[in-house]
Amino acid sequence: MAGRAGPSWEEFRSLEERLERSATRGDTWMVFAVVFAGIAVFLSIVGIGLSFRNVDDARRISRSAAPTPAQTGSAPGAASTPTCPTSARLPAGANDHGAVPAQGTTLTLEAADFFFKPTCVVSVTPGSTITLTVHNGGQALHNVTFPDQGIDTDVAPGQTVTVNVKVGAAGTYTYFCKYHRTSGMVGALVAGGG
Ligand SMILES: [Cu+2]
Image (tube, rainbow, N blue to C red; front, side, top):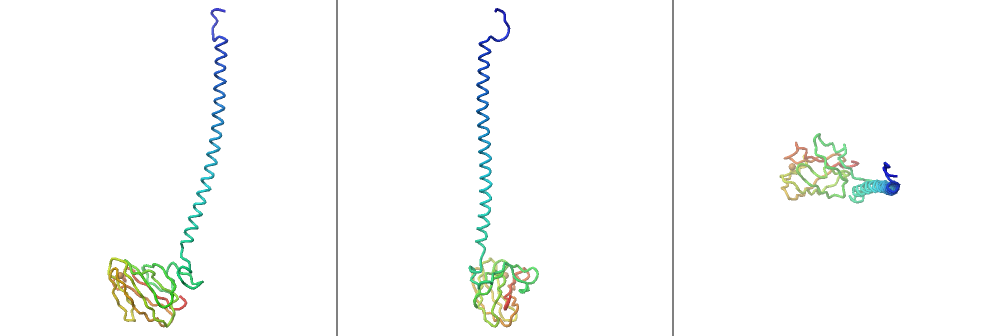
């Protein structure tokens, strides 16, 4: 019929086929989208799980890196303390770089700018003479002074000195660097219980 407006039957059919094809493509993309979303969720769950495990590993490593009584060579039960005990009677402002239990009658300390490390040695045997070795690992001239014991010995940077400290009754034996005492360069040997 001549002069008919609108698409012919053939044109309509081909349009319909195009629509069907695009609908099929749409379904395919939908399936892909769902699969990708599923993979993304799965990967993020796995990722979260792994990161938790890493945190656990880090905790385990930091725990195993912490010094144990066995590693510091002390008797079982005499765990080292991270800071000086109150029985050390350190003055206010002292630079506290930790306490360790005594091991026999020889002790080694590091003098640094401006502290002794360890700062305190606890559980020193009363009535013993301690052979105390001090190494200066700092830049400044340091000194080891035990008042009332006649010990006043300088130790130059990089040098090592040894002094004999007579430990009497149970109690606190304070020592210091006479050059940096007011900067907190003090420490103590604690004889007895600690
Ligand atoms: Cu000093």
